[in-house]
Length: 479
Image (cartoon, rainbow, N blue to C red; front, top):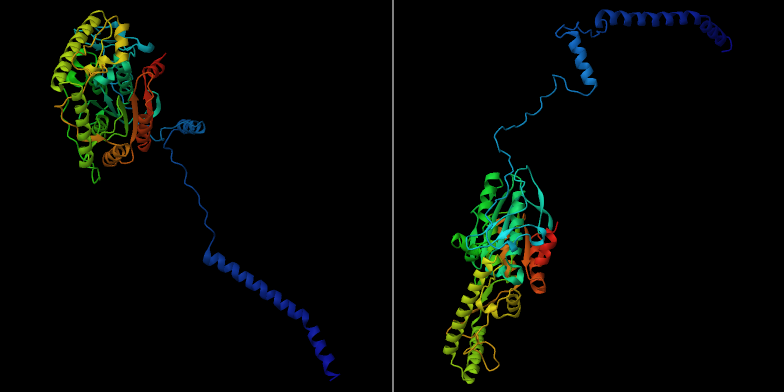
Protein backbone atom coordinates (compact mmCIF):
# COMPACT_ATOMS: atom_id res chain seq x y z
CA UNK A 1 0.00 0.00 0.00
CA UNK A 2 2.85 2.37 0.77
CA UNK A 3 4.60 1.74 -2.64
CA UNK A 4 1.35 2.25 -4.80
CA UNK A 5 0.09 5.64 -3.52
CA UNK A 6 3.21 7.73 -4.42
CA UNK A 7 3.28 6.25 -7.89
CA UNK A 8 -0.44 7.33 -8.63
CA UNK A 9 0.12 10.86 -7.30
CA UNK A 10 3.17 11.35 -9.48
CA UNK A 11 1.23 10.28 -12.54
CA UNK A 12 -1.61 12.73 -11.98
CA UNK A 13 0.54 15.74 -11.23
CA UNK A 14 2.76 15.02 -14.14
CA UNK A 15 -0.16 15.08 -16.64
CA UNK A 16 -1.80 18.33 -15.30
CA UNK A 17 -0.37 20.64 -17.98
CA UNK A 18 -1.79 18.42 -20.64
CA UNK A 19 -5.28 18.49 -19.10
CA UNK A 20 -5.33 22.30 -18.79
CA UNK A 21 -4.34 22.68 -22.39
CA UNK A 22 -7.07 20.34 -23.53
CA UNK A 23 -9.72 22.31 -21.52
CA UNK A 24 -8.67 25.69 -22.95
CA UNK A 25 -8.83 24.38 -26.51
CA UNK A 26 -12.35 23.01 -25.88
CA UNK A 27 -13.57 26.38 -24.62
CA UNK A 28 -12.07 28.22 -27.59
CA UNK A 29 -13.62 25.78 -30.04
CA UNK A 30 -17.11 26.23 -28.42
CA UNK A 31 -16.89 30.02 -28.53
CA UNK A 32 -15.87 29.94 -32.17
CA UNK A 33 -18.79 27.69 -32.95
CA UNK A 34 -21.26 30.04 -31.30
CA UNK A 35 -19.82 33.02 -33.19
CA UNK A 36 -20.04 31.22 -36.52
CA UNK A 37 -23.65 30.16 -35.88
CA UNK A 38 -24.77 33.69 -34.89
CA UNK A 39 -23.21 35.24 -37.94
CA UNK A 40 -24.32 32.71 -40.46
CA UNK A 41 -27.79 31.72 -39.17
CA UNK A 42 -29.15 34.69 -37.16
CA UNK A 43 -27.37 37.31 -39.17
CA UNK A 44 -26.55 40.85 -38.27
CA UNK A 45 -29.00 42.97 -36.13
CA UNK A 46 -31.18 45.12 -38.31
CA UNK A 47 -31.14 48.88 -37.83
CA UNK A 48 -33.99 51.29 -38.89
CA UNK A 49 -32.90 53.88 -41.35
CA UNK A 50 -35.52 56.51 -42.27
CA UNK A 51 -35.91 57.28 -45.93
CA UNK A 52 -34.96 60.74 -47.02
CA UNK A 53 -37.85 63.23 -46.41
CA UNK A 54 -40.01 64.06 -49.36
CA UNK A 55 -39.78 67.67 -50.36
CA UNK A 56 -43.56 68.28 -49.97
CA UNK A 57 -43.43 71.77 -48.43
CA UNK A 58 -41.04 74.63 -48.90
CA UNK A 59 -38.42 74.92 -46.22
CA UNK A 60 -39.58 78.38 -45.13
CA UNK A 61 -43.15 77.10 -44.60
CA UNK A 62 -41.92 74.30 -42.32
CA UNK A 63 -39.80 76.69 -40.29
CA UNK A 64 -42.78 79.05 -39.94
CA UNK A 65 -45.00 76.30 -38.55
CA UNK A 66 -42.35 75.31 -36.03
CA UNK A 67 -41.99 78.88 -34.84
CA UNK A 68 -45.75 79.30 -34.43
CA UNK A 69 -45.98 76.02 -32.55
CA UNK A 70 -43.21 77.06 -30.15
CA UNK A 71 -45.10 80.28 -29.38
CA UNK A 72 -48.30 78.40 -28.60
CA UNK A 73 -50.20 79.48 -31.68
CA UNK A 74 -52.23 77.43 -34.08
CA UNK A 75 -51.01 76.39 -37.48
CA UNK A 76 -53.05 75.55 -40.47
CA UNK A 77 -53.13 71.97 -39.27
CA UNK A 78 -54.90 72.94 -36.00
CA UNK A 79 -58.59 72.08 -35.54
CA UNK A 80 -60.88 74.64 -37.07
CA UNK A 81 -62.56 77.03 -34.62
CA UNK A 82 -66.36 76.88 -34.28
CA UNK A 83 -68.10 79.21 -36.64
CA UNK A 84 -69.82 82.18 -35.00
CA UNK A 85 -73.56 82.67 -35.42
CA UNK A 86 -74.10 86.13 -36.81
CA UNK A 87 -77.21 87.99 -37.83
CA UNK A 88 -77.69 91.13 -39.83
CA UNK A 89 -81.42 91.33 -39.15
CA UNK A 90 -82.27 94.71 -37.74
CA UNK A 91 -83.58 94.46 -34.20
CA UNK A 92 -82.93 90.73 -33.94
CA UNK A 93 -81.60 91.26 -30.42
CA UNK A 94 -82.93 94.75 -29.97
CA UNK A 95 -83.98 95.94 -26.56
CA UNK A 96 -87.37 97.61 -27.02
CA UNK A 97 -88.46 100.00 -24.29
CA UNK A 98 -91.14 99.19 -21.76
CA UNK A 99 -94.57 100.14 -23.12
CA UNK A 100 -95.04 103.89 -23.15
CA UNK A 101 -98.75 104.19 -22.51
CA UNK A 102 -100.75 107.34 -22.18
CA UNK A 103 -100.88 108.78 -18.69
CA UNK A 104 -104.00 110.85 -18.26
CA UNK A 105 -105.53 111.32 -14.87
CA UNK A 106 -104.09 111.78 -11.42
CA UNK A 107 -100.51 112.94 -11.68
CA UNK A 108 -100.21 112.65 -7.93
CA UNK A 109 -100.06 108.88 -8.32
CA UNK A 110 -96.66 108.92 -10.01
CA UNK A 111 -93.20 108.90 -8.54
CA UNK A 112 -94.11 106.84 -5.49
CA UNK A 113 -91.07 106.19 -3.33
CA UNK A 114 -88.77 107.64 -5.98
CA UNK A 115 -89.57 104.82 -8.37
CA UNK A 116 -91.41 106.88 -10.94
CA UNK A 117 -94.19 104.45 -11.68
CA UNK A 118 -96.18 107.31 -13.19
CA UNK A 119 -99.58 105.63 -12.87
CA UNK A 120 -102.48 107.75 -14.01
CA UNK A 121 -106.22 107.48 -13.63
CA UNK A 122 -108.81 109.44 -15.46
CA UNK A 123 -112.14 109.38 -17.18
CA UNK A 124 -110.40 109.12 -20.51
CA UNK A 125 -108.56 105.96 -19.60
CA UNK A 126 -105.44 105.05 -17.75
CA UNK A 127 -101.90 104.13 -18.38
CA UNK A 128 -98.50 103.35 -17.04
CA UNK A 129 -95.47 105.46 -17.73
CA UNK A 130 -92.35 103.94 -16.27
CA UNK A 131 -88.93 105.41 -15.61
CA UNK A 132 -87.25 102.07 -16.24
CA UNK A 133 -86.27 102.99 -19.78
CA UNK A 134 -85.18 100.05 -21.89
CA UNK A 135 -85.61 96.69 -20.30
CA UNK A 136 -83.06 94.02 -21.00
CA UNK A 137 -85.13 91.97 -23.38
CA UNK A 138 -82.19 90.23 -24.99
CA UNK A 139 -79.59 88.14 -23.24
CA UNK A 140 -78.75 84.49 -23.34
CA UNK A 141 -78.76 81.55 -21.00
CA UNK A 142 -79.85 80.98 -17.41
CA UNK A 143 -80.14 83.92 -15.04
CA UNK A 144 -80.69 84.47 -11.33
CA UNK A 145 -82.70 87.60 -10.62
CA UNK A 146 -84.26 89.52 -7.74
CA UNK A 147 -87.90 90.33 -7.14
CA UNK A 148 -89.46 92.45 -4.38
CA UNK A 149 -86.65 91.78 -1.93
CA UNK A 150 -86.05 88.14 -2.82
CA UNK A 151 -82.60 87.75 -4.37
CA UNK A 152 -80.95 84.91 -6.28
CA UNK A 153 -84.23 83.48 -7.50
CA UNK A 154 -84.33 81.01 -10.37
CA UNK A 155 -85.50 82.51 -13.64
CA UNK A 156 -85.88 79.62 -16.05
CA UNK A 157 -89.63 78.90 -15.91
CA UNK A 158 -91.29 81.69 -13.96
CA UNK A 159 -94.98 82.21 -13.18
CA UNK A 160 -96.55 85.18 -11.38
CA UNK A 161 -99.83 84.65 -9.53
CA UNK A 162 -101.18 88.12 -8.73
CA UNK A 163 -104.19 89.35 -6.76
CA UNK A 164 -105.73 92.26 -8.70
CA UNK A 165 -108.99 92.50 -6.75
CA UNK A 166 -110.44 95.69 -5.34
CA UNK A 167 -109.36 94.73 -1.82
CA UNK A 168 -105.74 95.11 -2.90
CA UNK A 169 -106.48 98.68 -3.99
CA UNK A 170 -107.85 99.73 -0.61
CA UNK A 171 -106.26 102.79 1.01
CA UNK A 172 -105.34 100.52 3.90
CA UNK A 173 -102.82 98.80 1.62
CA UNK A 174 -101.51 101.66 -0.48
CA UNK A 175 -104.06 101.89 -3.28
CA UNK A 176 -103.00 102.59 -6.84
CA UNK A 177 -99.50 103.71 -5.95
CA UNK A 178 -98.47 100.46 -4.28
CA UNK A 179 -100.03 98.24 -6.93
CA UNK A 180 -98.31 100.31 -9.63
CA UNK A 181 -94.95 99.36 -8.13
CA UNK A 182 -95.87 95.68 -7.96
CA UNK A 183 -97.00 95.70 -11.59
CA UNK A 184 -93.85 97.48 -12.74
CA UNK A 185 -91.60 95.08 -10.82
CA UNK A 186 -93.28 92.13 -12.53
CA UNK A 187 -92.74 93.73 -15.93
CA UNK A 188 -89.16 94.56 -15.01
CA UNK A 189 -88.27 90.97 -14.09
CA UNK A 190 -89.89 89.56 -17.21
CA UNK A 191 -88.11 92.22 -19.26
CA UNK A 192 -84.77 90.99 -17.89
CA UNK A 193 -85.36 87.31 -18.70
CA UNK A 194 -83.12 85.78 -21.38
CA UNK A 195 -84.84 84.41 -24.50
CA UNK A 196 -84.26 80.83 -23.31
CA UNK A 197 -86.44 81.41 -20.24
CA UNK A 198 -90.21 81.03 -20.12
CA UNK A 199 -92.84 83.01 -18.21
CA UNK A 200 -96.52 82.99 -17.36
CA UNK A 201 -98.96 85.15 -15.39
CA UNK A 202 -102.24 84.29 -13.64
CA UNK A 203 -104.37 87.16 -12.35
CA UNK A 204 -107.12 86.52 -9.84
CA UNK A 205 -109.94 88.67 -8.58
CA UNK A 206 -111.80 86.72 -5.94
CA UNK A 207 -112.59 83.37 -7.49
CA UNK A 208 -112.31 84.76 -11.03
CA UNK A 209 -109.13 83.87 -12.91
CA UNK A 210 -107.46 85.42 -15.91
CA UNK A 211 -104.36 83.51 -17.12
CA UNK A 212 -102.21 85.38 -19.62
CA UNK A 213 -101.85 82.21 -21.71
CA UNK A 214 -102.61 78.53 -21.37
CA UNK A 215 -98.92 77.64 -21.55
CA UNK A 216 -95.56 79.20 -20.70
CA UNK A 217 -94.23 81.76 -23.18
CA UNK A 218 -90.65 82.00 -24.36
CA UNK A 219 -89.08 85.27 -23.22
CA UNK A 220 -88.49 86.60 -26.71
CA UNK A 221 -88.63 90.28 -27.56
CA UNK A 222 -91.95 89.83 -29.34
CA UNK A 223 -93.56 87.91 -26.49
CA UNK A 224 -92.35 90.41 -23.90
CA UNK A 225 -93.69 93.35 -25.85
CA UNK A 226 -97.07 91.66 -26.24
CA UNK A 227 -97.14 90.92 -22.52
CA UNK A 228 -96.32 94.53 -21.63
CA UNK A 229 -99.30 95.68 -23.69
CA UNK A 230 -101.50 93.22 -21.80
CA UNK A 231 -100.19 93.92 -18.28
CA UNK A 232 -99.80 97.69 -18.52
CA UNK A 233 -103.47 98.72 -18.20
CA UNK A 234 -104.25 96.54 -15.18
CA UNK A 235 -105.77 98.55 -12.33
CA UNK A 236 -105.28 101.92 -14.03
CA UNK A 237 -108.94 102.72 -14.71
CA UNK A 238 -111.48 103.24 -11.99
CA UNK A 239 -114.27 101.69 -14.06
CA UNK A 240 -112.24 98.60 -14.96
CA UNK A 241 -110.45 97.44 -11.85
CA UNK A 242 -109.26 93.88 -11.35
CA UNK A 243 -109.76 91.65 -14.36
CA UNK A 244 -112.77 93.67 -15.48
CA UNK A 245 -110.51 95.54 -17.91
CA UNK A 246 -110.59 92.46 -20.15
CA UNK A 247 -114.29 91.87 -19.68
CA UNK A 248 -114.01 89.38 -16.84
CA UNK A 249 -112.36 86.07 -16.10
CA UNK A 250 -110.98 83.68 -18.70
CA UNK A 251 -112.23 80.13 -18.99
CA UNK A 252 -109.90 77.86 -17.05
CA UNK A 253 -110.20 74.11 -16.72
CA UNK A 254 -108.81 72.77 -13.49
CA UNK A 255 -106.84 69.53 -13.75
CA UNK A 256 -107.28 67.49 -10.58
CA UNK A 257 -104.13 66.30 -8.78
CA UNK A 258 -103.32 62.72 -9.68
CA UNK A 259 -103.91 60.04 -7.07
CA UNK A 260 -104.36 62.52 -4.22
CA UNK A 261 -106.52 62.06 -1.16
CA UNK A 262 -107.88 65.61 -1.15
CA UNK A 263 -110.96 66.08 1.01
CA UNK A 264 -113.84 66.42 -1.47
CA UNK A 265 -115.47 68.90 0.90
CA UNK A 266 -112.49 71.27 0.70
CA UNK A 267 -112.87 74.45 -1.37
CA UNK A 268 -109.66 76.43 -1.93
CA UNK A 269 -109.42 80.14 -1.21
CA UNK A 270 -108.86 82.52 -4.17
CA UNK A 271 -105.07 82.55 -3.88
CA UNK A 272 -104.88 78.75 -3.52
CA UNK A 273 -107.09 78.29 -6.59
CA UNK A 274 -104.90 80.74 -8.51
CA UNK A 275 -101.81 78.75 -7.45
CA UNK A 276 -103.56 75.70 -8.93
CA UNK A 277 -103.84 77.50 -12.27
CA UNK A 278 -100.23 78.63 -12.06
CA UNK A 279 -98.83 75.19 -11.27
CA UNK A 280 -100.67 73.69 -14.22
CA UNK A 281 -98.26 75.70 -16.39
CA UNK A 282 -95.47 73.50 -14.94
CA UNK A 283 -93.05 76.21 -13.79
CA UNK A 284 -90.05 75.82 -11.53
CA UNK A 285 -90.46 79.21 -9.80
CA UNK A 286 -93.72 80.84 -8.70
CA UNK A 287 -94.31 84.26 -7.14
CA UNK A 288 -97.69 84.65 -5.43
CA UNK A 289 -98.89 88.12 -4.38
CA UNK A 290 -102.12 88.10 -2.40
CA UNK A 291 -103.99 90.54 -0.23
CA UNK A 292 -105.70 87.81 1.79
CA UNK A 293 -104.28 84.74 3.48
CA UNK A 294 -107.31 82.53 3.99
CA UNK A 295 -106.98 78.83 3.32
CA UNK A 296 -110.45 78.20 1.91
CA UNK A 297 -113.46 76.48 3.40
CA UNK A 298 -114.82 73.07 4.30
CA UNK A 299 -118.39 71.91 4.50
CA UNK A 300 -119.65 71.78 8.05
CA UNK A 301 -120.93 68.63 9.64
CA UNK A 302 -124.63 68.37 10.29
CA UNK A 303 -124.17 68.83 14.03
CA UNK A 304 -122.16 72.03 13.61
CA UNK A 305 -124.62 73.32 11.04
CA UNK A 306 -127.51 72.83 13.43
CA UNK A 307 -125.63 74.77 16.10
CA UNK A 308 -125.06 77.66 13.71
CA UNK A 309 -128.74 77.78 12.83
CA UNK A 310 -129.72 77.95 16.50
CA UNK A 311 -127.22 80.74 17.14
CA UNK A 312 -128.53 82.81 14.25
CA UNK A 313 -132.13 82.37 15.34
CA UNK A 314 -131.20 83.59 18.81
CA UNK A 315 -129.64 86.76 17.32
CA UNK A 316 -132.76 87.44 15.24
CA UNK A 317 -135.03 86.88 18.24
CA UNK A 318 -132.99 89.33 20.32
CA UNK A 319 -133.49 92.02 17.65
CA UNK A 320 -137.19 91.33 17.45
CA UNK A 321 -137.48 91.79 21.22
CA UNK A 322 -136.08 95.30 20.68
CA UNK A 323 -139.12 95.98 18.53
CA UNK A 324 -137.30 95.91 15.20
CA UNK A 325 -139.06 94.76 12.05
CA UNK A 326 -136.19 92.92 10.39
CA UNK A 327 -137.60 93.26 6.88
CA UNK A 328 -137.87 97.02 7.34
CA UNK A 329 -134.38 97.06 8.80
CA UNK A 330 -133.04 95.39 5.67
CA UNK A 331 -134.88 97.86 3.42
CA UNK A 332 -133.51 100.89 5.32
CA UNK A 333 -129.98 99.47 5.30
CA UNK A 334 -129.96 98.86 1.54
CA UNK A 335 -131.26 102.38 0.88
CA UNK A 336 -128.61 103.96 3.10
CA UNK A 337 -125.81 101.95 1.47
CA UNK A 338 -127.01 102.86 -2.03
CA UNK A 339 -127.02 106.56 -1.09
CA UNK A 340 -123.50 106.33 0.35
CA UNK A 341 -122.29 104.53 -2.77
CA UNK A 342 -123.57 107.32 -5.01
CA UNK A 343 -121.88 109.92 -2.83
CA UNK A 344 -118.58 108.01 -3.07
CA UNK A 345 -118.84 107.80 -6.84
CA UNK A 346 -119.42 111.55 -7.04
CA UNK A 347 -116.40 112.18 -4.78
CA UNK A 348 -114.21 109.93 -6.93
CA UNK A 349 -115.21 111.76 -10.10
CA UNK A 350 -114.26 115.02 -8.48
CA UNK A 351 -110.93 113.66 -7.20
CA UNK A 352 -110.02 112.32 -10.63
CA UNK A 353 -110.91 115.66 -12.23
CA UNK A 354 -108.57 117.29 -9.73
CA UNK A 355 -105.92 114.69 -10.59
CA UNK A 356 -106.02 113.10 -7.14
CA UNK A 357 -106.35 109.50 -5.97
CA UNK A 358 -109.87 108.05 -5.87
CA UNK A 359 -111.15 105.81 -3.07
CA UNK A 360 -111.66 102.09 -3.73
CA UNK A 361 -113.93 99.91 -1.61
CA UNK A 362 -114.94 96.29 -1.95
CA UNK A 363 -118.08 96.66 0.15
CA UNK A 364 -119.94 99.89 0.76
CA UNK A 365 -119.98 99.22 4.49
CA UNK A 366 -116.23 99.93 4.43
CA UNK A 367 -117.15 103.63 4.35
CA UNK A 368 -118.19 103.41 8.01
CA UNK A 369 -114.73 102.32 9.20
CA UNK A 370 -112.79 104.89 11.20
CA UNK A 371 -109.67 104.85 9.02
CA UNK A 372 -111.75 105.35 5.87
CA UNK A 373 -113.62 108.26 7.43
CA UNK A 374 -110.26 109.78 8.41
CA UNK A 375 -108.97 109.41 4.83
CA UNK A 376 -112.09 111.16 3.51
CA UNK A 377 -111.51 114.00 5.95
CA UNK A 378 -107.89 114.39 4.82
CA UNK A 379 -109.12 114.66 1.25
CA UNK A 380 -111.52 117.41 2.29
CA UNK A 381 -114.67 115.37 1.67
CA UNK A 382 -117.19 113.55 3.85
CA UNK A 383 -119.83 110.82 3.67
CA UNK A 384 -122.25 110.48 6.55
CA UNK A 385 -124.02 107.15 6.71
CA UNK A 386 -127.64 107.49 7.77
CA UNK A 387 -128.40 104.73 10.31
CA UNK A 388 -132.04 105.64 10.73
CA UNK A 389 -134.20 102.52 10.76
CA UNK A 390 -131.39 99.99 10.82
CA UNK A 391 -129.54 100.42 14.10
CA UNK A 392 -130.09 98.74 17.45
CA UNK A 393 -130.67 100.37 20.84
CA UNK A 394 -126.93 100.98 21.23
CA UNK A 395 -126.87 102.85 17.93
CA UNK A 396 -124.85 100.16 16.13
CA UNK A 397 -125.80 99.17 12.58
CA UNK A 398 -127.70 95.91 12.14
CA UNK A 399 -126.16 93.75 9.42
CA UNK A 400 -128.30 90.64 9.96
CA UNK A 401 -130.54 89.75 7.02
CA UNK A 402 -133.20 87.18 7.94
CA UNK A 403 -133.66 86.22 4.29
CA UNK A 404 -129.98 85.63 3.60
CA UNK A 405 -128.95 82.04 3.09
CA UNK A 406 -127.06 80.65 6.05
CA UNK A 407 -123.55 79.60 5.14
CA UNK A 408 -122.94 75.87 5.45
CA UNK A 409 -119.14 76.05 5.38
CA UNK A 410 -116.46 76.91 7.89
CA UNK A 411 -112.92 78.19 7.41
CA UNK A 412 -110.42 75.55 6.36
CA UNK A 413 -107.19 75.03 8.28
CA UNK A 414 -103.57 75.40 7.20
CA UNK A 415 -103.24 71.61 6.89
CA UNK A 416 -106.05 71.55 4.33
CA UNK A 417 -104.30 74.10 2.11
CA UNK A 418 -100.94 72.38 2.63
CA UNK A 419 -102.32 69.04 1.48
CA UNK A 420 -103.94 70.61 -1.58
CA UNK A 421 -100.86 72.59 -2.69
CA UNK A 422 -98.64 69.56 -2.02
CA UNK A 423 -100.79 67.39 -4.26
CA UNK A 424 -100.62 70.04 -7.00
CA UNK A 425 -96.84 70.28 -6.72
CA UNK A 426 -96.39 66.51 -6.90
CA UNK A 427 -98.60 66.35 -9.98
CA UNK A 428 -97.29 69.26 -12.04
CA UNK A 429 -93.77 70.18 -10.87
CA UNK A 430 -92.40 67.20 -8.92
CA UNK A 431 -89.34 68.37 -6.96
CA UNK A 432 -88.46 71.41 -9.07
CA UNK A 433 -90.77 73.94 -7.43
CA UNK A 434 -89.82 77.12 -5.56
CA UNK A 435 -93.08 78.66 -4.30
CA UNK A 436 -92.55 82.22 -3.04
CA UNK A 437 -95.43 83.94 -1.23
CA UNK A 438 -96.03 87.67 -0.64
CA UNK A 439 -98.82 88.93 1.63
CA UNK A 440 -99.78 92.53 0.90
CA UNK A 441 -100.85 94.22 4.13
CA UNK A 442 -101.39 97.71 5.49
CA UNK A 443 -98.39 99.79 6.59
CA UNK A 444 -99.02 99.07 10.27
CA UNK A 445 -100.42 95.55 9.96
CA UNK A 446 -98.63 92.54 11.42
CA UNK A 447 -100.94 89.57 10.70
CA UNK A 448 -98.75 87.15 12.59
CA UNK A 449 -100.96 84.06 12.21
CA UNK A 450 -101.23 84.56 8.45
CA UNK A 451 -97.50 85.23 8.18
CA UNK A 452 -96.64 82.05 10.06
CA UNK A 453 -98.97 79.94 7.94
CA UNK A 454 -97.77 81.28 4.60
CA UNK A 455 -94.16 80.90 5.71
CA UNK A 456 -94.79 77.20 6.31
CA UNK A 457 -96.38 76.77 2.89
CA UNK A 458 -93.48 78.54 1.15
CA UNK A 459 -90.75 76.64 2.99
CA UNK A 460 -92.36 73.28 2.37
CA UNK A 461 -92.12 73.96 -1.36
CA UNK A 462 -88.62 75.38 -1.57
CA UNK A 463 -89.58 79.05 -1.45
CA UNK A 464 -89.68 82.06 0.87
CA UNK A 465 -92.26 84.37 2.38
CA UNK A 466 -92.24 88.18 2.47
CA UNK A 467 -94.68 90.66 4.01
CA UNK A 468 -95.34 93.51 1.61
CA UNK A 469 -96.41 96.93 2.84
CA UNK A 470 -96.28 100.39 1.32
CA UNK A 471 -93.27 101.13 3.51
CA UNK A 472 -91.50 98.00 2.34
CA UNK A 473 -92.19 98.89 -1.28
CA UNK A 474 -90.75 102.34 -0.69
CA UNK A 475 -87.58 100.78 0.70
CA UNK A 476 -87.24 98.35 -2.19
CA UNK A 477 -87.69 101.00 -4.87
CA UNK A 478 -85.82 103.87 -3.25
CA UNK A 479 -82.86 105.07 -5.40
